[in-house]
Length: 259
Image (cartoon, rainbow, N blue to C red; front, side):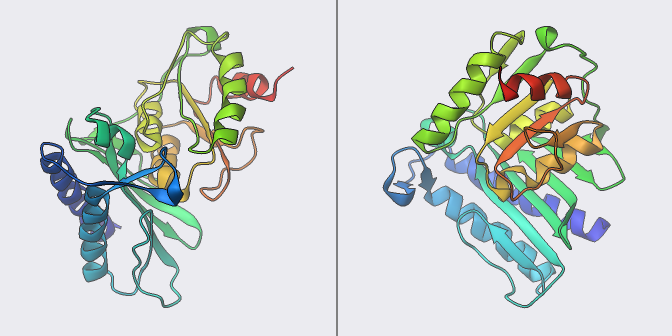
């Protein structure tokens, strides 16, 4: 696993440097699927190309699932890299300092390695299955908070209007129960903040595999819990993500379920 980790960390840091350097320059912004809410920049594409090149050179037989459509080998393989080259593109496009690189390795349907890199704060979150989660080499642990009314939560809203309306209902219930709710605009970063104890719980709908693959492992390896909104087993290919320090998980499930 050490070879996988070494390559993934190097690729994330290389892409992160590219992103941080580009943040101080002019860059082109495009819109996906004709919407004004789902952005992509030339920086996303350049960062993804750099990551794919690094992964493909090191592991030419591995498949790659990446947000902007880049691919690795088309041969059948139990190994698949799941890549978000720039999670928080809207933040990046506006100069709001909350975005990161996310790289995960999935082996036969199981996430075994997760790397998330915040290039502005130079924070490297990482986890290997069964070996714990770390931030810049220091072991991570979720928070000890036990009640919703003393919890700080974080969420995000889908690009489509229906998804936003649905989460507004969840938000309106949880905001009355929690100590506070934040929105960073980066699901990968949100999951890492749960793992590090900065946030006690996170929920969001309609996320994509590359948004949650790395962060989901980092949460569980830090002692947290991640499921769907009903408490069922989590899948990076599902449509609901609920992550917490585990201690407030059932309370969040009950509030999300509604009256």
